[in-house]
Image 1 (spheres, rainbow, N blue to C red):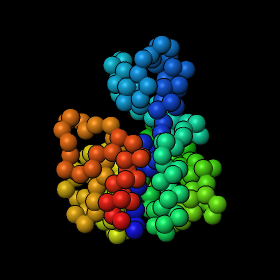
Image 2: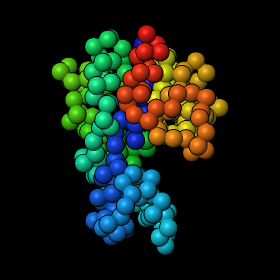
Image 3: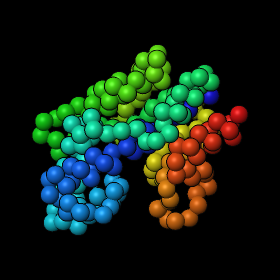
Image 4: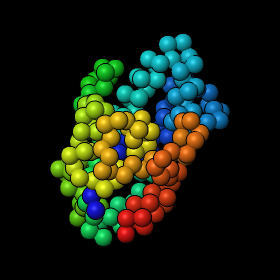
Length: 207
């Protein structure tokens, strides 16, 4: 199989980085109860000039802060299984080259590749993913066009708006990696709160 996967917030988990950095910068209280990126985002957006503050924080974390991010639990096992069974993993990410609000203009794509390299994505002893099978696209439309061109049997993403887009290729099975949908209603495609669930959908249903 050719398995397509999103990168940010699907493979890589920034929750603790957002939480820690927001506390360090005094954007949320030290005893802030939320732990997810979304909880931090919602709190910061309530501040004066909150949307711009949130965008600046995102730019910092997706560049310099990425080194502190981790893989979601279960991704390691999923990628090792894909490798052992001879499947091809293709990573397609909506990621601009530079952040709009980053004064240092850190290359976000290179930062992501460096993170993947440190986590053995491209090594033979690791997940054995080919570097040329990682694609960064500047817009959602370009991301969807790329997915359509790759011949994937499925695509795993954390964003409903990607999977629900009219341009999402009909021949590709959408898989949503999320605890719940924004509407609270079950989607027409698999909803997977964990990577264990993703593994079952991809490897069992397509076996």
